Picture 1: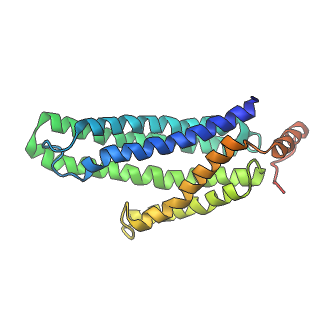
Picture 2 (picture 1 turned 135 degrees about the vertical axis):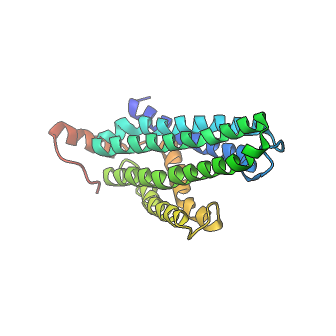
Picture 3 (picture 1 turned 90 degrees about the vertical axis):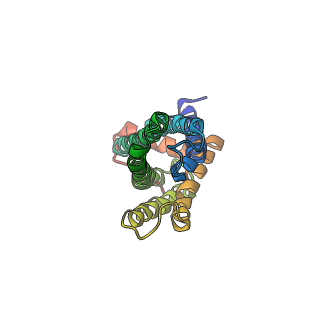
Amino acid sequence: MTPTRRAAVATGVLFFATHVTSVTALALYGPALDDAGFVTGSGSEQSVLTGAFLEVLLALTIVGTGVAIFPVVRRYSEGAALGYGALRTLEAAVIAAGIVPLLALTTLRDDGVASASDAVAPALVSLHDWTFLLGPSFVCATNTTVLAFALLRSGLVARFVPVIGLVGGPLLFASGTAQLFGAVAPLSAVAAVCAVPVFAWEISLATYLLVKGFRPDALRRLDAREAQGQPELVAA
């Protein structure tokens, strides 16, 4: 297996891993965030802790996607490769920040201080909710657009894949903006619909990379351009 093929497989696997960990984590800790009585004893603490652990794995796999695809995208544009890697790292950092309130909720539950819990627990839930908006909406939308644009211009994958990303990224950013200013409710049907194209982009990209890998003709053009010291390639 060539290094480029290994990069394609690693990127595809890590993209799938981000979805497995994120969906499972939310299913585990989500009910506790909506349960006003969680801190005082109802609900499962272990499910929250397991969900928090999966969020840690999610953050690591998000960074991993940027690392895995970096060597290939750099052959088209080092700036795009660095930008994508930095934005994925920022997204992971915001998600990691959102893990702390989850763990703090379990601490309040263990301490059993009802008076403090009544005031602090809603604030912790709000902190998590804001990180959930900033990371998976704004930062994810931006890094999606950066990578999709680079893949479209370089021709490293079939054209339809980055086109989905170029539709989904701005749409998700617009949805996040609407949620920020209260025009759309978080986790509403509208927000979910706006997130579908980015989901489709990541799944289609992961599947394409696992099944076909990066397009050999595009790789050859990039190699030839690099050898000749030419500016950034625009795929035909």
